[in-house]
Length: 584
Image (cartoon, rainbow, N blue to C red; front, side):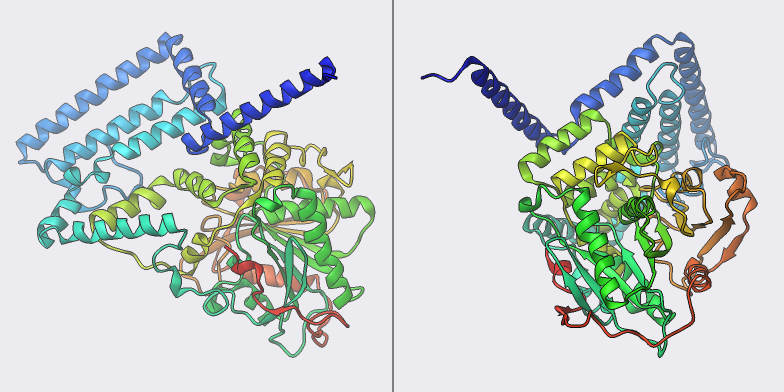
């Protein structure tokens, strides 16, 4: 007997969805995980509104004429002064190092780079303040215009870069031979899945992640490491570090001189840290709730066995901080008082203004990623690395091409760079939930994020909070991190430190040229906008680690004898750094 019509219709719809999913996944591979629909809509929105804005067109035409006139006068001055005029058409910002070498002031390279800067200035005006364009689309167009301009910069071409040409003439082309060798080595390493050149100097467990400790718990998702005490007495409240699973945990335990784990141990704290498993396609169905229950809450349970009736200084970094905020809100809702304090490092709880990462997050983009992840089972490290490279294209891409491949200079890497190359993946289901619930829907700040089938609210948290933002963060901009003030009503100490998303956190005492600002908002204080906070908060030289250590000490009990490693009757599973961090 043939199946009923309704079953045939259901099967047809399922087949159609599977076909679409396969096509969209193939499209993602072809377009480097970037949605062509999203990009096309952005450019179309910009072009149509610009075409319907005669005033803006006139303004851009006048600007083009002014730039051409200015460049012509500059050329005339060059001809009068044998190619060395005393002025410049455009002075780049101090942070723009592309044309800082004196060779760029000589003919004809001065004319080339000045013409480029004028073109860049025109495009900045052309991709801003277009009436009627969706802000997300305008940001996309502006971003991709900058990428195109960076690609065409005279500094990135051998024949128009005087520094590279001078080096080539001086070394009779040997710099290009070395650069070609470096390029070939990088291609081979990438295709073979090997780490970047020089990373082998930083072996996990020997040079980095070398603080002594033991794995005291392990499940399918995470290991819990307890570190050995380095002082005769310790504070009774332990510290639990919750890193993001977008990274390996040992950014918090790099080399001995800049390990936050070791610093905390030396300050007299019992330190625990989660080490997440690097997921494979078999872990595709792991979701945010799994990371919450089998990661954070499982760690709390084990710490409770090792140190009964001790409250915990919970500390979350990046996505681990967002997870901690969700967990703390759920604990406050349910009357769970196991936390003593909450520390959040570069962690967002509101995603309405998440910075430049929002360029890669909209419905079309997320749908394409979901189709690709559904086929693979995870979000790969290469996809994340590509997005971050585009956000900082000069520092992470073009500067490297210039120095390594054109100048033939292989810069030695440091421990932070080696860690950054030790990449991880994210399960498909979890990453989809993360993008949709937090970025697209902003459920957490709206009080809609569900834990255990019921929504949680950041406003329920009553424990003291220490939050850190970094000044040049491209992943979690400090003004977005600062929005915690709007949702959390309790005592909040906010720190703004120099550096970026990673280097601002790896900020050991004695690090040169570091500074930070700190101010505490008490319950009931009036809200202070971020720029007013910045203007009214004085800077302190040095590392914010010392301020955080003092903050923890003020909220800790008198020192006691250190605990044994592991729970009674539960032998240690491995020495630190454990197994999961070694998985590739």
